[in-house]
Image (cartoon, rainbow, N blue to C red; front, top):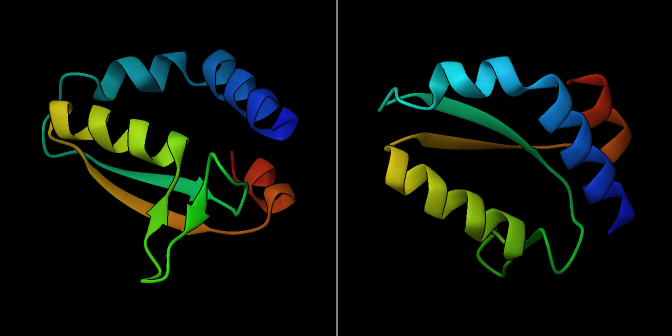
Length: 82
């Protein structure tokens, strides 16, 4: 859970400009790095990403008309990809 908090802080601090640039653009595709970290992020039996963080992000994306593409990789690789 601490990893998620750290990652969210990094994204919030470094991603403010990019977040503002997509906020009001329906149809934008966002690539979202994911890794198994229950209960925030996990794969269900059908291979779909679920969990508190994923469900919240899906709700925001639906309101904004964004398309999400989940990109699985280990946490260390996700940090390098920021």
